[in-house]
Length: 50
Image (tube, rainbow, N blue to C red; front, side, top):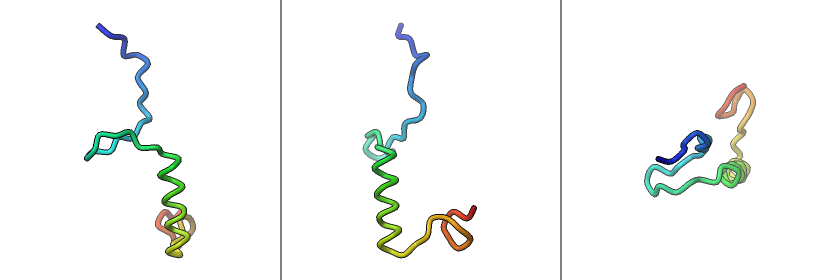
């Protein structure tokens, strides 16, 4: 029986491909897209108001 006490739980897996998603790369892509499209990510009129 294998030891599962050290499994990484902070991993995002693509539900379609089953591949592990690189969170930092994804965040950078979303930031770049928002800048290109003129969409704010923080603030009162943004997609994620704080």
